[in-house]
Length: 221
Length: 275
Image (cartoon, rainbow over all chains, first blue to last red; front, side):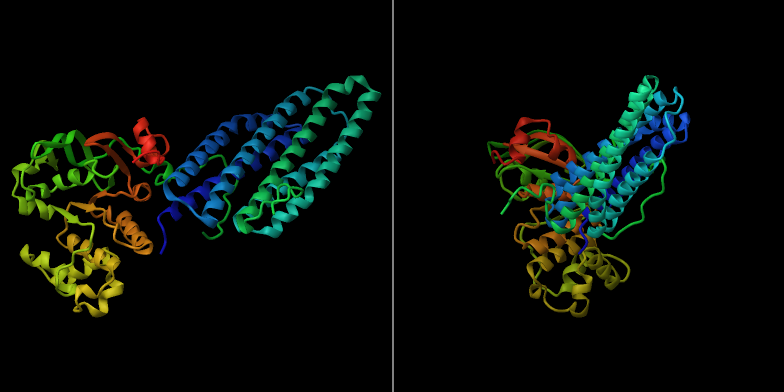
């Protein structure tokens, strides 16, 4: 027997996936505003932020209604709780995209500090994490979620490398301090996006297996 | 839920019109019934006070409240079942499609407003005859067996009984009997169906079946349900009325009443703090 709230659950999933697409798009466009020196892309990210925010509130409303009206159990309950958390992470990813876009507008006022080598690699990795985390939600794919978790260290490594390299440039030439500092913030924002993708992947594992793996040192026996 | 394809990148998010978020917000609903300033008395004891509310067409409206709050009384006034009780008296106005129900022939009114009770009450007849009964006494023209099948299908009972339509209705389970009573009520194509705690004598699976049925039936007729199970009201209804000691305390779209009730008494009741 199909229960009529399944329709509501399906709609909730669809809306979350739209939210995911918008967040992914914000990340991609904002990073490429920096990498491709494209001011229009940065401006577009700022324009599109409202859509993400509206969707976040709509998804929250749906979550509240499902919880209030339908006494969900087991997988349905875990799904709605996971959606609520993922919704927050996606909105934060959108915000980090906006931060990068705002940084891009400031960076573009200066000549390029150096050819970008690690930044494109880092951003590709982070975009892939977000993409895989969302695909893991759709497919309820624990393995894919775990691959996202495994990627986080590489992202942190890139961030450290970019920090070190840009610090060296800043120490050598004080005229690049401003754009170099902004680039460090871009790397910092990308690293944060990776963290949110990691959260989403952890939620997938919770959704599918009912296990909370967020804090492995906490003994819950 | 099965995996779905993720949407392509775009900011043109399609709105979903039939969503939980908008289960009932439209202000432009037509009203099948309108209750105005209804006061009700059993002898000298007043049990409903100045109740006014609308019953929206093709929606499920539920009446909730603690025992003795007047929800069943209110339901029974809607097809004048209260007239079977000696000393019962009401004043106020109840309209069905803008016509006063108190000024109509009661038999034809009850054909237009069907009722299903707490305990399944099939007639001591066959499954077929239970559904056909209302059609026959209403002098229905046209093939009865087709109408019976249609009603049983609408009541989600057909597949379970189609091979033994001539067995006694008493051989059915409680949940099946209740769906049979719904089929019997549906057979005469009522505009409104009143249900008085239709699941209170049923097990959880039968209850879930009836709930799904109600959600589907609202396309066919307007539904008013009294339930002491507020979760049931939350699950199935579009609008919920909360009554307390004969007064209508709050009447709102169900999602609103159960997430952000406007009256502290409603809040206390639905959070289980009294009642």
